Image 1 (cartoon, helix red, strand yellow):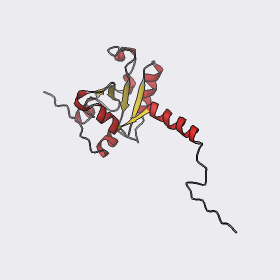
Image 2 (spheres, one colour; image 1 turned 30 degrees about the vertical axis):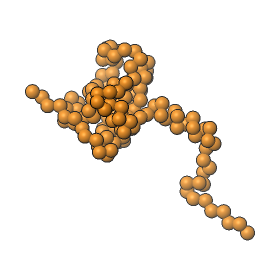
Image 3 (spheres, rainbow, N blue to C red; image 1 turned 180 degrees about the horizontal axis):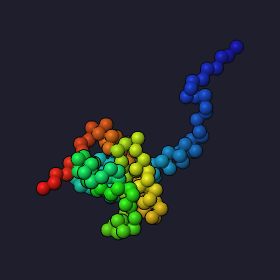
Image 4 (spheres, rainbow, N blue to C red; image 1 turned 180 degrees about the vertical axis):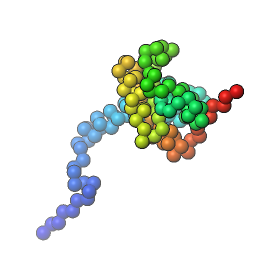
Length: 139
């Protein structure tokens, strides 16, 4: 008599490899992570505009991802995007996994026809990776 045991992981079979590849490639088309953003922005590089999309200017000034621009998700419209050419890729982030401001910003950008990805983890993820925040000092 053969006894087959399954774990909580395997009790629901894994998707076929083709389906899994399509799923994960779709996620990568919509999201990026803190490490990829950090590496891409070294030495002022980056082929995207990084937007800090939650809180207020004072909160942004107190600590944000270096190279980011503050634009609250509720202010994203054609006028605030006018300085950026139509094909500009935006990467949005907020406080962290408990915050949905990045999702709100990404939805607004997409509805306006702008390419967008969300930086998963947000500010908390950035700090968890051991990266420093920038502080804006008012003169």
